[in-house]
Length: 446
Ligand code: F0G
Image (cartoon, rainbow, N blue to C red; front, side):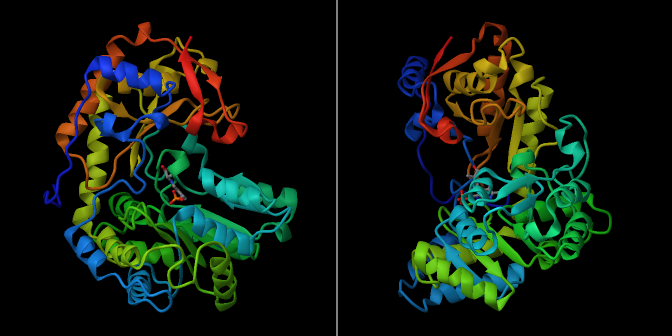
């Protein structure tokens, strides 16, 4: 059931087929190079692309732009304490800024960081400290068809193997990413959070939760974990986050804002160290690279994030997209995640070899066919890593209607009808850093 109605609208347009062809060619078959105006339904990311509520827009006007001691910061502190249970908060301009503050304070050269699955920027910040980012996903995370409730879980067994390999003294941090973005947006159970916490205690590591999509995760717990059927999303979120020593948060997800993030910690010493780094990299610790008005909007957004009606509407829309695509015969990772549906392009375009990027070929066809923008997360984005050739359809929060979802499904059906005629792509120009090539490389059909 819809938990909002529309108050402000933005005009969108589907360019005609000829224009879409030309745009694609001009963009070098890389949808990051498209003008957003030329995109009809934009499923590139759920990060910073959602709609704010009227209450958030009102908060923007009341934002306090004081350099130090801003009232908007106090509002954020109180929201983080009420919603997430942490008293010590340091804002940052977005999630990766928060990662830089926290991991820079906790991780040293030669260390190993364990995570159910590192998101790309997390991995990069761990590497930037000279440390190794080791993933510990549950075995079932790799089974695209297993309809299991918590495929995002942390594997304590895998984590133990890493500790045996490098020694507990070299593992300062254990991270739990909820939901697990790099494992198809799958949730993590409260029971698994408790196990991961106990494991971190056992090896004397700091236990961090990447809480970007904490309310979506709590909704799945309510739906799927025995004993939580009657609990509120707010109380489940609090219970799960209570296990953590520290949080990293991208406000662009379930802060329900277009920019912002923060670190939250319990330990006063760690708080001081993070604040010192904030002054160096983000700004004075009562604004941390954010405008006062954005702090105010994020404070309101965090409270809205755990509203059951809001998050139910959200999860149901993503699930509806997944179910409609599955009914249309599109091969998917199952079940759909909290923020996105993941399509198996390797299976859909089985005739296109991995070296010719079946995922990127699908991304281009979706734009050509229906002006839909998705993102490739396979061989093109992560060269040589043996990842399955998945394409992610991430839904911005509170933005699109059922008609948009139907348009995406119709677009897929049309592409699937002529799948055999679609060819792969080759890279003709790429930047020096292979890790970043999917943001700017240019390609052409083979
Ligand atoms: N952690 C997770 C789990 C994320 O999904 C992201 C961003 C970040 C950290 C970094 O946050 O973008 O505010 O700096 N994910 C976006 C995505 C970019 O499209 O999945 P950020």
